[in-house]
Image 1 (spheres, rainbow, N blue to C red):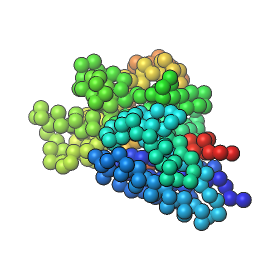
Image 2: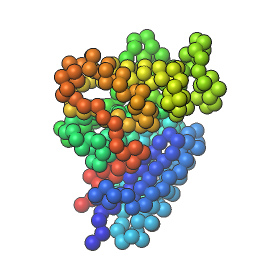
Image 3: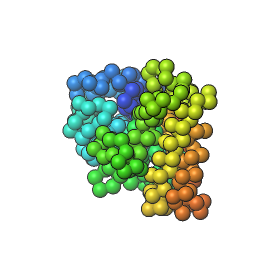
Image 4: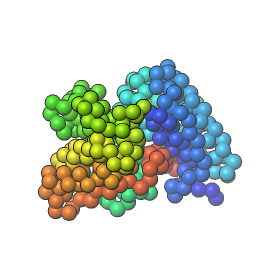
Length: 320
């Protein structure tokens, strides 16, 4: 008898990654498309493209002898549960109060579960990645923004209305740069890809010399390459991002008394420059961290974390 299969979807602001995953976490079929092309498209356009890719995967899975039981989808933004309505998404601004779950279920022969993408990443790391070492941990995803998912005593903690884990909007510098959320000095303004690029632009405008003056576009990846080549402006941008992360995590670790912090996302690839100041600042600000109770580790799954976490959601929600 074939193993149960579901589809996990990580819907990013640039790319959508989909995969058929079995109950052991093994990948069977993969698919992807450029979701960034739909940023300003009508609401239904991205939904229809997503449904098209899902239908293709359902057909492919059927050829292996096991049907797909459910779909799990991780979306960047605020999701109203359990209805699967996307309240707002920074990457897809047309998706406001948009019933994604209902829209997909009307086009697919299987049930759909929708959640925040950072929650999905946390579940993925808990299931098959670095989170297996901890009963309680915080998973941060450092990408275009800063996302967070919180696992407490083995269970995903969503909070009163599904917004637990929004670490990117913890204030680390009162009076700092304005954030899209309406606050100032949010962690996301320092530790995200956009925040790191902004800090470099500010340094260049102030007269600092850097090879990044010729970078076009100026991205976190370009800053990382420059840091590896010895560029001091680039290295300082990652150092300050690490300090900001340590400030934010210090208070959270004291409050939650978690065992671990798992850090992933594209920005975390600059761990050589980001990690040491993060840990130093965290230990300075948290007696729990200074005592050695909490470990800070890199995520293990890369881009697969969100897919596996979404698949985990689907497996838990699939009919038995």
